[in-house]
Length: 117
Image 1 (cartoon, helix red, strand yellow):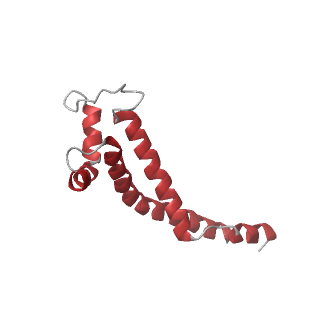
Image 2: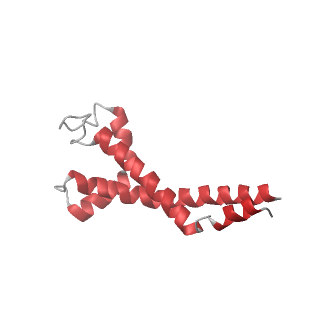
Image 3: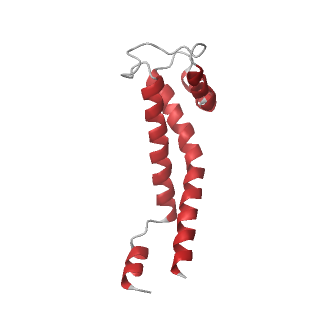
């Protein structure tokens, strides 16, 4: 093993840290894009709520975030604020993205091991 390979192995984050980083980053990006697209306070919407009946892509957002909607209604009631809804969206995507993170990190580490031989 060369010195460079040894240094690369020594600098590698633990498996759980890599998974958590990927999961948090993915969930944060999805939530931020969702707020930018759907949020009433978003610069795109200028304080106007989107009508899901007249905007089919908005309906896809509602369907994709149905578990977050259920969590929102159970935790904050129907009168909860917009930030509390997007907090529930973040939680939903964080849970989903942990599985995605495990897959990504596993593939990266498998490729790194196979490249050593």
